[in-house]
Amino acid sequence: MAGSAEYTWVCDPVDGTVPFSHGIPVSTFSLALTKNGESILGVVYDPFQDRLYSALKGEGAFLNGKKISVSSASQFKGTVGEYEMFEHSKYNLNKLQERFVFEGVKLMSFCSVIYPSMLVAAGELAFVVFPLTNAHDGAAVKIIVEEAGGRVTDIFGEDQKYDTKINGFIASNGILHKQLVSLCKELIIKQ
View 1 (cartoon, one colour):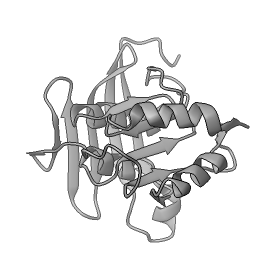
View 2 (view 1 turned 45 degrees about the vertical axis):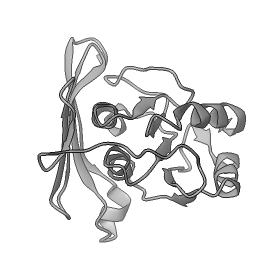
View 3 (view 1 turned 120 degrees about the vertical axis):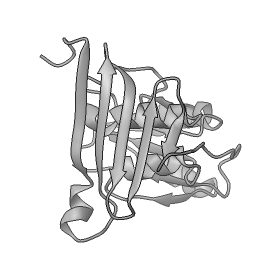
């Protein structure tokens, strides 16, 4: 039963199956170890650019062995963010997307949430908003982004376990996190 073991490996062998099946090189392999639902180790491999992201609780986050950190952006204007929304998403992000455009955010959607989340950890993107419920989409993201200095919560700013279904997630540089949570609470619609 999910969530019943002290230690659980959480794996997504091909995050980004849509781009992968269309020859677009933004898919990754993701593996996390959780202890009582808390991510304590994460590894993400981008085979197309030979990038290995890793983090161990309390040890920092790394890209190919070099320490990485999130961006220092303190306002939305001029940042790059990523959001995903599919027909089976738990939440509708259309109004949130409109607000981001109004705020001057350059939005992307990769159909691969782990790849852009690693870009948050490396300081290239300011945030990711993800409305689905699969733990394998967020378990490695949680430890790697937070060890890089960012913040990862559910879509409403609450902590959650990553060995069972999740309530979507926001991965951010930490500085913008409170504003992102506020916008999500105000603008997203449960489907």
